[in-house]
Image (cartoon, rainbow, N blue to C red; front, side, top):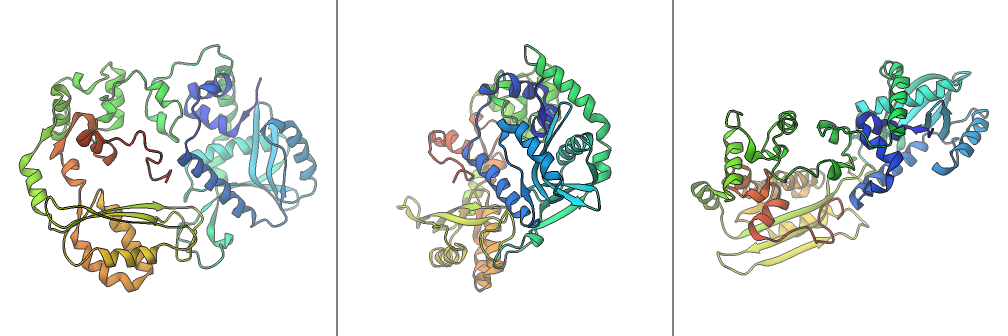
Length: 443
Protein backbone atom coordinates (compact mmCIF):
# COMPACT_ATOMS: atom_id res chain seq x y z
CA UNK A 1 0.00 0.00 0.00
CA UNK A 2 1.51 3.39 -0.98
CA UNK A 3 2.21 5.94 1.72
CA UNK A 4 0.08 9.07 1.98
CA UNK A 5 2.09 12.28 2.16
CA UNK A 6 0.75 15.48 3.65
CA UNK A 7 0.04 16.97 0.19
CA UNK A 8 -1.91 13.87 -0.86
CA UNK A 9 -3.68 13.84 2.50
CA UNK A 10 -4.89 17.39 1.89
CA UNK A 11 -6.01 16.39 -1.61
CA UNK A 12 -7.94 13.49 -0.11
CA UNK A 13 -9.68 15.81 2.33
CA UNK A 14 -10.68 18.07 -0.54
CA UNK A 15 -11.87 15.39 -2.96
CA UNK A 16 -11.60 11.59 -3.01
CA UNK A 17 -11.65 11.60 -6.80
CA UNK A 18 -8.59 13.85 -6.94
CA UNK A 19 -6.76 11.56 -4.50
CA UNK A 20 -7.59 8.51 -6.64
CA UNK A 21 -6.22 10.19 -9.76
CA UNK A 22 -2.94 11.06 -8.04
CA UNK A 23 -2.32 7.40 -7.32
CA UNK A 24 -3.97 5.67 -10.29
CA UNK A 25 -4.07 8.10 -13.23
CA UNK A 26 -1.53 10.80 -12.48
CA UNK A 27 -0.74 11.22 -16.19
CA UNK A 28 -4.26 12.60 -16.71
CA UNK A 29 -3.75 15.45 -14.24
CA UNK A 30 -2.76 18.61 -16.15
CA UNK A 31 0.61 20.18 -15.42
CA UNK A 32 0.89 23.57 -13.78
CA UNK A 33 1.02 26.75 -15.86
CA UNK A 34 3.70 29.44 -15.64
CA UNK A 35 1.73 31.60 -13.23
CA UNK A 36 1.09 28.70 -10.84
CA UNK A 37 4.72 27.63 -11.03
CA UNK A 38 5.72 31.18 -10.10
CA UNK A 39 3.57 30.87 -6.97
CA UNK A 40 5.30 27.58 -6.09
CA UNK A 41 8.70 29.19 -6.67
CA UNK A 42 7.74 32.01 -4.32
CA UNK A 43 6.87 29.45 -1.67
CA UNK A 44 10.30 27.85 -2.02
CA UNK A 45 11.98 31.24 -1.72
CA UNK A 46 9.99 32.04 1.42
CA UNK A 47 11.12 28.71 2.85
CA UNK A 48 14.76 29.56 2.20
CA UNK A 49 14.42 32.85 4.10
CA UNK A 50 12.74 31.05 7.01
CA UNK A 51 15.71 28.71 7.29
CA UNK A 52 17.95 31.72 7.96
CA UNK A 53 16.27 31.98 11.37
CA UNK A 54 17.83 28.60 12.22
CA UNK A 55 21.48 29.11 11.25
CA UNK A 56 22.65 25.75 12.65
CA UNK A 57 19.99 23.83 10.77
CA UNK A 58 20.65 20.67 8.79
CA UNK A 59 19.07 19.93 5.43
CA UNK A 60 17.91 16.33 5.32
CA UNK A 61 18.60 15.09 1.79
CA UNK A 62 16.81 12.77 -0.55
CA UNK A 63 14.21 13.50 -3.17
CA UNK A 64 10.66 12.12 -3.25
CA UNK A 65 11.82 8.87 -4.93
CA UNK A 66 14.40 8.30 -2.17
CA UNK A 67 12.08 8.64 0.78
CA UNK A 68 13.32 5.52 2.62
CA UNK A 69 16.87 6.86 2.40
CA UNK A 70 15.65 10.25 3.65
CA UNK A 71 13.90 8.59 6.60
CA UNK A 72 17.12 6.85 7.56
CA UNK A 73 19.07 10.11 7.27
CA UNK A 74 16.46 11.79 9.47
CA UNK A 75 16.80 9.14 12.18
CA UNK A 76 20.52 9.80 12.34
CA UNK A 77 20.13 13.58 12.18
CA UNK A 78 17.63 13.63 15.08
CA UNK A 79 20.42 12.43 17.39
CA UNK A 80 22.33 15.67 16.77
CA UNK A 81 19.57 17.79 18.39
CA UNK A 82 19.80 20.53 15.80
CA UNK A 83 17.09 22.17 13.67
CA UNK A 84 16.25 19.87 10.77
CA UNK A 85 14.87 20.99 7.42
CA UNK A 86 12.50 18.56 5.66
CA UNK A 87 12.93 15.87 8.31
CA UNK A 88 11.10 12.77 7.05
CA UNK A 89 9.28 10.04 8.95
CA UNK A 90 6.74 7.39 8.09
CA UNK A 91 4.21 6.09 10.60
CA UNK A 92 1.75 3.45 9.47
CA UNK A 93 0.48 4.89 6.14
CA UNK A 94 1.41 8.50 6.80
CA UNK A 95 4.57 10.15 5.49
CA UNK A 96 5.49 13.67 6.59
CA UNK A 97 8.35 16.09 6.06
CA UNK A 98 8.13 19.17 8.24
CA UNK A 99 9.61 22.38 6.90
CA UNK A 100 11.48 22.80 10.18
CA UNK A 101 11.77 20.37 13.09
CA UNK A 102 13.33 22.40 15.88
CA UNK A 103 14.69 21.01 19.19
CA UNK A 104 13.24 22.63 22.33
CA UNK A 105 13.77 21.83 25.99
CA UNK A 106 15.69 18.71 26.91
CA UNK A 107 13.96 16.10 24.84
CA UNK A 108 11.25 17.85 22.92
CA UNK A 109 10.70 19.23 19.44
CA UNK A 110 8.55 21.85 17.79
CA UNK A 111 7.18 21.55 14.28
CA UNK A 112 7.41 24.78 12.31
CA UNK A 113 5.45 24.87 9.06
CA UNK A 114 6.42 27.78 6.81
CA UNK A 115 3.73 29.35 4.62
CA UNK A 116 3.97 32.10 2.02
CA UNK A 117 0.49 33.32 2.99
CA UNK A 118 -0.11 36.22 5.37
CA UNK A 119 -2.33 34.38 7.85
CA UNK A 120 -3.07 30.94 9.25
CA UNK A 121 -5.64 29.06 7.17
CA UNK A 122 -7.78 26.06 8.12
CA UNK A 123 -5.98 23.86 5.63
CA UNK A 124 -2.70 24.58 7.45
CA UNK A 125 -4.13 22.98 10.59
CA UNK A 126 -4.83 19.71 8.77
CA UNK A 127 -1.31 19.88 7.31
CA UNK A 128 0.22 20.22 10.78
CA UNK A 129 -2.07 17.59 12.29
CA UNK A 130 -0.75 14.93 9.92
CA UNK A 131 2.81 15.92 10.75
CA UNK A 132 2.17 15.79 14.48
CA UNK A 133 0.44 12.40 14.09
CA UNK A 134 3.40 11.01 12.15
CA UNK A 135 6.19 12.44 14.31
CA UNK A 136 4.48 11.51 17.57
CA UNK A 137 3.79 8.06 16.17
CA UNK A 138 7.50 7.33 15.66
CA UNK A 139 8.26 8.41 19.21
CA UNK A 140 9.23 12.06 18.99
CA UNK A 141 8.06 14.23 21.88
CA UNK A 142 6.32 17.12 20.09
CA UNK A 143 5.98 20.10 22.42
CA UNK A 144 4.17 22.41 20.03
CA UNK A 145 3.14 23.04 16.45
CA UNK A 146 3.68 26.43 14.82
CA UNK A 147 2.87 28.21 11.62
CA UNK A 148 5.41 30.73 10.37
CA UNK A 149 3.81 33.06 7.84
CA UNK A 150 4.63 36.30 6.06
CA UNK A 151 4.17 39.57 7.93
CA UNK A 152 2.39 41.80 5.42
CA UNK A 153 3.23 44.91 7.47
CA UNK A 154 6.96 44.40 7.06
CA UNK A 155 8.59 47.06 4.90
CA UNK A 156 11.89 46.30 3.25
CA UNK A 157 14.73 48.69 4.09
CA UNK A 158 18.01 47.33 2.76
CA UNK A 159 18.62 43.60 3.17
CA UNK A 160 15.67 41.36 4.03
CA UNK A 161 15.48 40.75 7.80
CA UNK A 162 13.92 37.28 8.27
CA UNK A 163 13.11 38.01 11.92
CA UNK A 164 10.82 40.83 10.81
CA UNK A 165 9.58 39.20 7.61
CA UNK A 166 7.84 36.36 9.48
CA UNK A 167 5.24 35.93 12.19
CA UNK A 168 5.35 32.69 14.16
CA UNK A 169 2.08 31.48 15.69
CA UNK A 170 1.80 28.59 18.10
CA UNK A 171 -1.43 26.62 17.48
CA UNK A 172 -1.20 23.28 19.36
CA UNK A 173 -4.79 23.11 20.62
CA UNK A 174 -6.30 23.57 17.16
CA UNK A 175 -4.02 20.87 15.78
CA UNK A 176 -4.59 18.39 18.62
CA UNK A 177 -8.35 18.68 18.09
CA UNK A 178 -7.86 17.22 14.61
CA UNK A 179 -5.70 14.25 15.68
CA UNK A 180 -8.60 11.85 16.38
CA UNK A 181 -9.70 12.20 12.76
CA UNK A 182 -6.34 11.29 11.22
CA UNK A 183 -6.49 7.48 11.32
CA UNK A 184 -10.11 7.41 10.12
CA UNK A 185 -9.22 9.72 7.24
CA UNK A 186 -6.14 7.68 6.31
CA UNK A 187 -8.17 4.44 6.32
CA UNK A 188 -10.84 5.99 4.12
CA UNK A 189 -8.20 7.35 1.73
CA UNK A 190 -6.47 3.95 1.55
CA UNK A 191 -9.74 2.35 0.50
CA UNK A 192 -10.25 5.04 -2.13
CA UNK A 193 -6.79 4.50 -3.60
CA UNK A 194 -7.38 0.72 -3.89
CA UNK A 195 -10.57 1.13 -5.95
CA UNK A 196 -10.39 0.06 -9.59
CA UNK A 197 -12.39 3.09 -10.71
CA UNK A 198 -12.36 6.63 -9.47
CA UNK A 199 -15.20 7.53 -7.11
CA UNK A 200 -18.04 9.59 -8.53
CA UNK A 201 -17.98 12.87 -6.65
CA UNK A 202 -20.53 15.55 -7.59
CA UNK A 203 -19.01 18.94 -8.35
CA UNK A 204 -19.45 21.60 -5.68
CA UNK A 205 -17.80 24.24 -3.55
CA UNK A 206 -14.97 21.84 -2.75
CA UNK A 207 -13.74 22.11 -6.35
CA UNK A 208 -12.09 25.40 -5.42
CA UNK A 209 -11.66 25.02 -1.67
CA UNK A 210 -9.03 25.20 -0.35
CA UNK A 211 -7.34 25.06 -3.77
CA UNK A 212 -8.48 25.10 -7.38
CA UNK A 213 -8.65 21.43 -8.33
CA UNK A 214 -6.62 20.41 -11.40
CA UNK A 215 -9.46 18.11 -12.46
CA UNK A 216 -12.03 20.88 -12.92
CA UNK A 217 -11.99 20.64 -16.72
CA UNK A 218 -12.53 16.88 -16.49
CA UNK A 219 -15.26 16.95 -13.86
CA UNK A 220 -17.09 20.00 -15.19
CA UNK A 221 -16.91 18.97 -18.85
CA UNK A 222 -20.57 17.94 -19.03
CA UNK A 223 -21.76 21.48 -18.28
CA UNK A 224 -22.44 24.06 -20.99
CA UNK A 225 -20.68 27.42 -20.80
CA UNK A 226 -23.91 29.06 -19.65
CA UNK A 227 -24.30 26.90 -16.55
CA UNK A 228 -25.79 28.17 -13.26
CA UNK A 229 -22.37 28.98 -11.76
CA UNK A 230 -22.07 31.78 -14.35
CA UNK A 231 -25.18 33.63 -13.13
CA UNK A 232 -24.10 37.14 -12.22
CA UNK A 233 -23.50 37.38 -8.44
CA UNK A 234 -25.59 34.26 -7.83
CA UNK A 235 -24.63 32.35 -4.69
CA UNK A 236 -22.51 29.35 -5.60
CA UNK A 237 -24.35 27.12 -3.13
CA UNK A 238 -27.62 27.82 -4.94
CA UNK A 239 -25.96 27.35 -8.34
CA UNK A 240 -24.81 23.86 -7.38
CA UNK A 241 -28.27 23.05 -6.02
CA UNK A 242 -29.67 23.85 -9.46
CA UNK A 243 -27.03 21.73 -11.19
CA UNK A 244 -27.59 18.76 -8.88
CA UNK A 245 -31.32 19.03 -9.52
CA UNK A 246 -30.65 18.59 -13.25
CA UNK A 247 -30.65 22.22 -14.40
CA UNK A 248 -27.37 22.51 -16.29
CA UNK A 249 -28.11 25.58 -18.42
CA UNK A 250 -29.41 28.92 -17.14
CA UNK A 251 -31.95 28.87 -19.97
CA UNK A 252 -33.61 25.95 -18.14
CA UNK A 253 -34.12 27.83 -14.86
CA UNK A 254 -37.83 27.72 -13.92
CA UNK A 255 -39.74 30.97 -13.58
CA UNK A 256 -40.38 30.39 -9.89
CA UNK A 257 -36.65 30.65 -9.06
CA UNK A 258 -36.05 34.14 -7.69
CA UNK A 259 -33.41 36.07 -9.65
CA UNK A 260 -32.18 39.65 -9.52
CA UNK A 261 -32.92 42.03 -12.39
CA UNK A 262 -29.44 41.57 -13.83
CA UNK A 263 -29.62 37.80 -13.53
CA UNK A 264 -33.03 37.80 -15.25
CA UNK A 265 -31.61 39.96 -18.02
CA UNK A 266 -28.71 37.57 -18.42
CA UNK A 267 -31.06 34.58 -18.71
CA UNK A 268 -33.19 36.40 -21.27
CA UNK A 269 -30.13 37.22 -23.39
CA UNK A 270 -29.08 33.59 -23.39
CA UNK A 271 -32.56 32.51 -24.41
CA UNK A 272 -32.69 34.95 -27.33
CA UNK A 273 -29.01 34.74 -28.23
CA UNK A 274 -28.97 38.53 -28.59
CA UNK A 275 -27.12 41.18 -26.58
CA UNK A 276 -28.90 43.55 -24.26
CA UNK A 277 -28.20 47.24 -24.90
CA UNK A 278 -29.25 50.05 -22.56
CA UNK A 279 -28.82 53.00 -24.92
CA UNK A 280 -29.58 55.63 -22.27
CA UNK A 281 -27.13 54.10 -19.81
CA UNK A 282 -24.35 53.89 -22.41
CA UNK A 283 -24.98 57.44 -23.58
CA UNK A 284 -24.89 58.72 -20.00
CA UNK A 285 -21.54 56.99 -19.47
CA UNK A 286 -20.05 58.28 -22.72
CA UNK A 287 -21.25 61.82 -22.05
CA UNK A 288 -19.09 61.84 -18.94
CA UNK A 289 -15.90 61.38 -20.97
CA UNK A 290 -13.78 64.41 -21.79
CA UNK A 291 -11.18 64.60 -24.54
CA UNK A 292 -8.33 63.98 -24.80
CA UNK A 293 -8.88 60.39 -23.65
CA UNK A 294 -6.04 58.48 -21.99
CA UNK A 295 -6.46 54.70 -21.90
CA UNK A 296 -4.23 53.35 -19.12
CA UNK A 297 -3.38 49.81 -18.07
CA UNK A 298 -0.79 48.49 -15.59
CA UNK A 299 0.82 45.12 -15.15
CA UNK A 300 2.05 44.59 -11.61
CA UNK A 301 4.12 42.17 -9.58
CA UNK A 302 3.34 41.36 -5.94
CA UNK A 303 5.95 39.06 -4.44
CA UNK A 304 6.12 37.54 -0.97
CA UNK A 305 9.72 38.74 -0.63
CA UNK A 306 9.79 42.48 -1.44
CA UNK A 307 12.12 43.17 -4.34
CA UNK A 308 12.83 46.81 -3.51
CA UNK A 309 13.08 49.14 -0.54
CA UNK A 310 9.85 50.72 0.74
CA UNK A 311 7.82 47.72 -0.44
CA UNK A 312 5.68 45.36 1.66
CA UNK A 313 5.10 41.65 0.91
CA UNK A 314 2.57 41.18 -1.88
CA UNK A 315 2.32 44.91 -2.54
CA UNK A 316 1.46 45.47 -6.19
CA UNK A 317 4.43 47.13 -7.89
CA UNK A 318 3.88 48.26 -11.51
CA UNK A 319 6.52 46.98 -13.89
CA UNK A 320 4.76 47.82 -17.14
CA UNK A 321 2.17 50.25 -18.43
CA UNK A 322 0.39 50.84 -21.70
CA UNK A 323 -1.06 54.27 -22.50
CA UNK A 324 -3.13 55.09 -25.58
CA UNK A 325 -4.05 58.73 -26.19
CA UNK A 326 -6.99 59.86 -28.33
CA UNK A 327 -7.02 63.65 -28.79
CA UNK A 328 -10.44 63.89 -30.46
CA UNK A 329 -13.31 61.70 -31.75
CA UNK A 330 -12.20 59.61 -34.74
CA UNK A 331 -8.65 60.88 -34.21
CA UNK A 332 -5.48 58.84 -34.49
CA UNK A 333 -4.41 56.85 -31.44
CA UNK A 334 -0.97 57.57 -30.00
CA UNK A 335 0.63 54.76 -28.00
CA UNK A 336 3.15 55.09 -25.16
CA UNK A 337 4.49 52.23 -23.06
CA UNK A 338 7.06 51.26 -20.47
CA UNK A 339 8.60 47.94 -19.43
CA UNK A 340 10.95 47.70 -16.46
CA UNK A 341 14.26 45.88 -16.76
CA UNK A 342 13.78 44.53 -13.23
CA UNK A 343 17.06 45.93 -11.89
CA UNK A 344 15.64 48.78 -9.84
CA UNK A 345 12.35 50.06 -8.45
CA UNK A 346 10.32 51.12 -11.53
CA UNK A 347 7.85 53.34 -9.67
CA UNK A 348 9.73 56.68 -9.82
CA UNK A 349 10.27 56.40 -13.56
CA UNK A 350 6.66 55.33 -14.19
CA UNK A 351 5.30 58.20 -12.12
CA UNK A 352 7.50 60.72 -13.91
CA UNK A 353 6.54 59.43 -17.36
CA UNK A 354 2.83 59.44 -16.52
CA UNK A 355 3.08 62.95 -15.11
CA UNK A 356 4.64 64.07 -18.39
CA UNK A 357 2.07 62.21 -20.53
CA UNK A 358 -1.32 62.54 -18.82
CA UNK A 359 -1.63 66.30 -19.21
CA UNK A 360 -3.93 68.47 -17.11
CA UNK A 361 -7.33 67.70 -18.64
CA UNK A 362 -9.21 64.84 -20.27
CA UNK A 363 -10.48 61.52 -18.97
CA UNK A 364 -8.09 58.78 -17.88
CA UNK A 365 -9.89 55.55 -18.76
CA UNK A 366 -9.02 52.23 -17.14
CA UNK A 367 -10.83 48.89 -16.96
CA UNK A 368 -11.53 48.16 -13.29
CA UNK A 369 -10.01 51.54 -12.46
CA UNK A 370 -9.85 50.94 -8.70
CA UNK A 371 -6.82 48.77 -9.40
CA UNK A 372 -4.93 51.44 -11.36
CA UNK A 373 -5.84 54.05 -8.77
CA UNK A 374 -4.67 51.80 -5.96
CA UNK A 375 -1.33 51.18 -7.66
CA UNK A 376 -0.70 54.90 -8.14
CA UNK A 377 -1.98 55.84 -4.70
CA UNK A 378 0.41 53.38 -3.04
CA UNK A 379 3.29 54.61 -5.17
CA UNK A 380 2.83 58.29 -4.34
CA UNK A 381 2.67 57.45 -0.62
CA UNK A 382 6.34 56.51 -0.91
CA UNK A 383 7.37 59.00 -3.59
CA UNK A 384 5.61 61.93 -2.00
CA UNK A 385 6.85 64.48 -4.54
CA UNK A 386 4.09 63.14 -6.80
CA UNK A 387 1.27 63.35 -4.22
CA UNK A 388 -0.02 66.73 -5.32
CA UNK A 389 0.06 65.73 -8.97
CA UNK A 390 -1.85 62.50 -8.30
CA UNK A 391 -4.47 64.28 -6.19
CA UNK A 392 -5.15 66.50 -9.19
CA UNK A 393 -5.59 63.64 -11.68
CA UNK A 394 -7.46 61.07 -9.56
CA UNK A 395 -10.82 62.74 -10.20
CA UNK A 396 -10.20 62.38 -13.95
CA UNK A 397 -10.03 58.57 -13.78
CA UNK A 398 -13.06 56.85 -15.34
CA UNK A 399 -13.83 53.15 -14.93
CA UNK A 400 -14.65 51.42 -18.22
CA UNK A 401 -15.93 48.45 -16.23
CA UNK A 402 -19.03 50.43 -15.21
CA UNK A 403 -21.18 49.97 -18.36
CA UNK A 404 -20.58 46.21 -18.31
CA UNK A 405 -20.87 45.70 -14.56
CA UNK A 406 -24.07 47.78 -14.64
CA UNK A 407 -25.43 45.71 -17.55
CA UNK A 408 -25.72 48.72 -19.86
CA UNK A 409 -24.36 46.17 -22.30
CA UNK A 410 -24.46 42.40 -21.95
CA UNK A 411 -23.65 39.76 -24.56
CA UNK A 412 -24.45 36.05 -24.08
CA UNK A 413 -20.79 35.22 -24.80
CA UNK A 414 -19.86 36.96 -21.55
CA UNK A 415 -21.43 34.13 -19.53
CA UNK A 416 -22.14 36.36 -16.56
CA UNK A 417 -18.71 37.94 -16.41
CA UNK A 418 -17.72 41.57 -16.89
CA UNK A 419 -14.01 40.71 -17.12
CA UNK A 420 -12.23 42.37 -20.03
CA UNK A 421 -11.09 38.90 -21.12
CA UNK A 422 -14.67 37.99 -22.00
CA UNK A 423 -15.99 41.43 -22.90
CA UNK A 424 -13.28 42.01 -25.50
CA UNK A 425 -14.00 38.91 -27.63
CA UNK A 426 -17.75 39.34 -27.18
CA UNK A 427 -17.55 42.84 -28.67
CA UNK A 428 -14.67 42.54 -31.13
CA UNK A 429 -14.02 38.82 -31.74
CA UNK A 430 -10.43 39.49 -30.65
CA UNK A 431 -9.44 36.79 -28.17
CA UNK A 432 -6.74 36.27 -25.56
CA UNK A 433 -6.65 32.55 -26.35
CA UNK A 434 -3.70 32.44 -28.74
CA UNK A 435 -1.58 35.09 -27.07
CA UNK A 436 1.82 33.98 -25.81
CA UNK A 437 1.29 36.02 -22.65
CA UNK A 438 -2.41 36.26 -21.90
CA UNK A 439 -2.64 37.18 -18.23
CA UNK A 440 -0.82 39.18 -15.58
CA UNK A 441 0.61 36.30 -13.57
CA UNK A 442 2.41 34.92 -16.61
CA UNK A 443 3.63 38.40 -17.52
